[in-house]
Length: 274
Image (cartoon, rainbow, N blue to C red; front, side, top):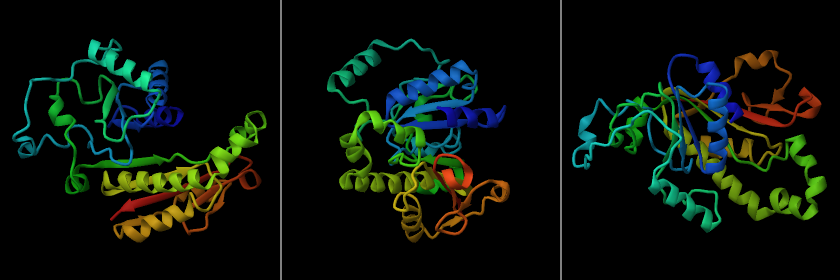
């Protein structure tokens, strides 16, 4: 939520912003922050799997109506967003809570839980906005910029690591040191980076970042990604020349840590789509 609010503040009165998270409770907190600081007018929030999310920026599909031939039109349009939920939505929420999982099943459709009055959705037909994109369409009508704020072990976050003093060694072992957990995270991180890049338009830029200090979750993920995507190229982050950070294990990537920058750990890599 904090990063999305910062981006919304930087966006100002132009463009729009799409937030995606698989955990509905995290997006609900993000929605609360956007409303609290009056930053949500140009934002949209989707509960969705970031490794498969495929909805392009608003209006990007409207110029090609052939894509919607054969799609049923029930006349449903986006009216101004309200916090009041329909009976159907409330029933779905109850079932999800009863199942005991805060995460969206991988087979579920993306759920739009918030959109601002200037997000471009109000008055549009839902079938145009929520239509999944193709790789070719994304190259010309995709996002100008993408931030992949990937799930990680948080081992670079000092405040997070300090909590294990109270949580105990078993929790540390399960969440940070467990080999299976780390393996699953690496697969997820590569999937998030790959799909984020797929949604990027040609010439657009993507930032991949974690708060882990490990090479496996940072440089190794970047290296694997670059080896499979010849249209991706690392960009030098020019403002970093004056930042208190050091180069990562791959040229043009950055690392922050307690010794270098007196901060928690942070890894940053910036790509362009050729």
